[in-house]
Length: 55
Figure 1 (cartoon, one colour):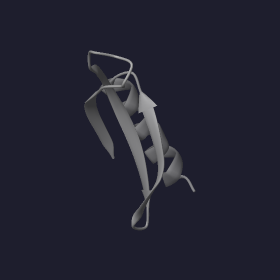
Figure 2 (cartoon, helix red, strand yellow):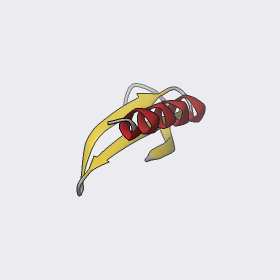
Figure 3 (cartoon, rainbow, N blue to C red):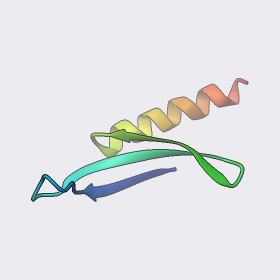
Figure 4 (cartoon, rainbow, N blue to C red):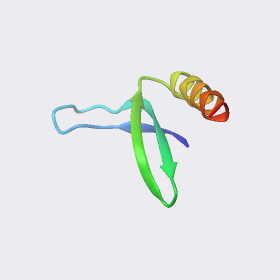
């Protein structure tokens, strides 16, 4: 699952657009990876899906 968001941090006054790739195993989130943009996250998700299909 990939989610794009406007993230903010306490030390910053402006939001930063980024994307997070979540891996779900069973009924829980087993990994979360941040990417600087949606395209990068979607590319990584596609690579992961292709690798998982070869197992």
